[in-house]
Image (cartoon, rainbow, N blue to C red; front, top):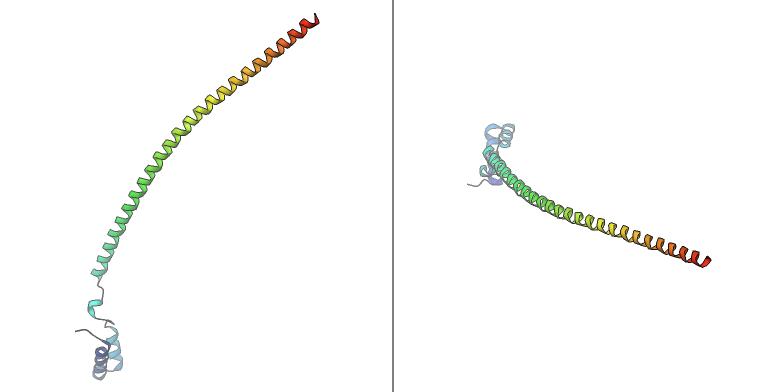
Length: 126
């Protein structure tokens, strides 16, 4: 039988007549405001806590798995970038070597040109 507000009020009236207003009010305050089927027990709360912990643990494991996977991808991408940077450094080193060689070649041509010019000038003076 469902307890409704009318039934509760009727019970209070009968208790008031039998044991008095103060005692009836005190006794009624110990009754739940709804039916007993709606009251949570310690067991219900423990079961709820266990389910929440299981759900939380499951979520943590999934998140950790995703994070580990992402970190692995980032590590492999960083490794590839390091390899590319190494090859770029090598190319820059060879370009620098070529630039030094070209500079030396131009300097030699300049020296030879100056020497030929001096020799021609010396021949004209003789």
